[in-house]
Image 1 (cartoon, helix red, strand yellow):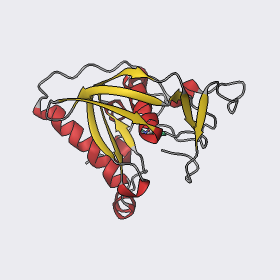
Image 2 (cartoon, rainbow, N blue to C red):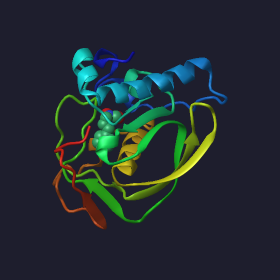
Image 3 (cartoon, rainbow, N blue to C red):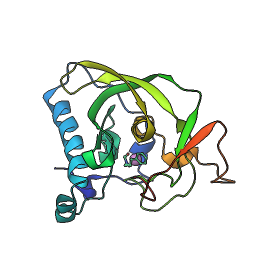
Length: 190
Ligand code: SB7
Ligand code: NI
């Protein structure tokens, strides 16, 4: 089971590497990795388990964050979030995207970043994505709203990119051209 001490933090070189493609069909080891990533995000969103194991809540986690430089991540939104998405993505890709952008008005956080970095993180508002599931089947789906933002945050981890790389350093809250804010009740999404 993944816990906070397994998660590497900014400054660790793995977070800046481009992760390796996963070989298909998935090895038993890579399948287990995907299952563990999904288990982490699910557990971290369960108040009791999060408290018991001292897990910081997150909607997603990518393999490089546990120092495994492979192209695999998990995303999970529980029923209460109003979203309905739970997936492990293997070798994920964005195949097309909107011109329009979106950003979370409260900014983004990251399990690998132990500080708050305020500012707008411009993302594509809508994306069509492709990848493989844990059982090696190809998937293709369209995402918008928070799931689209989260998918891009995780995909960035596979390419060595941190969310704050996208924040305008001179004016973190500068209006983003062609973008709609996404207002969530929660201040900062992690
Ligand atoms: C979308 C996704 C996240 C934060 C903000 C917007 C994921 C945060 C957890 N992670 O650090 C996963 O990489
Ligand atoms: Ni992150």
